[in-house]
Length: 147
Image (cartoon, rainbow, N blue to C red; front, side, top):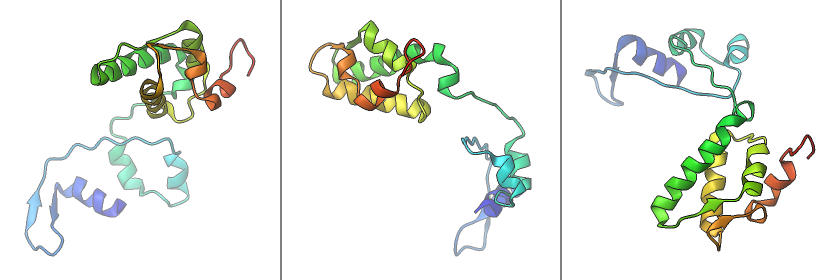
């Protein structure tokens, strides 16, 4: 598959399966991964030419756990979006916000968005309390240097 993607990016054309006519394309490709592609390249698991093309503009984004200052804003953003969808007006208590802000978020922003959606769909009140947060997150949040 990597070879096919490389060919399309280099030739700016492709041939449909079963076809014989080349079709020109103007393509911009955005890719993201949490894998260490350089290591895959060294192990011959990733095409080095494709890597060169994909890294023409390289943006390194640190994981969410390394930019904790963004977590509260993201929670409020996702919660506002959920409120607009559902017509609810759910807010987050300080205790609940602290627990969410101190979780390690191994699944990054998608996990955060999923948890906000989950909480907003099951909550019975208008204010998210610490007890409304899934136990696994409460147990793995690091608050005041302690788990």
